Length: 103
Image (cartoon, rainbow, N blue to C red):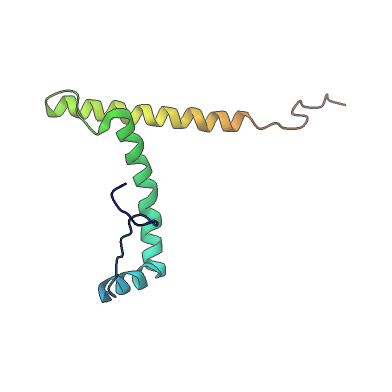
C-alpha cells in the first residue's frame, strides 16, 4: 500500500457546469432526435455483426477482392439471420393443423 491513510487513496473531481452539455442534453429529449437515434441503432448492430465476421480488416489486396469479402460477409450474416428467423417460426405449435376429413 502506498498511503498511510486508513481509507486508502481518494480522488476528488469537481465537475464544472457546462452550457454546451446542458444544451445537448435538452436536445436529446426532443422527439425528432429520438426518431433519428432509433433509425441509427439497428445499423450499428449490423455493423457490429459484420466486424465480428471479419469485415473490420481486409484479408486480401485489391478493391475487387475486398468487395468480394464484404459481399461474402453480408451473405453469411443474412443466412444466419434467415435461419434464426426460420427456427423461430418452426418452433410455434399450432393446435390441430390436420384438416378434418370431409363429411
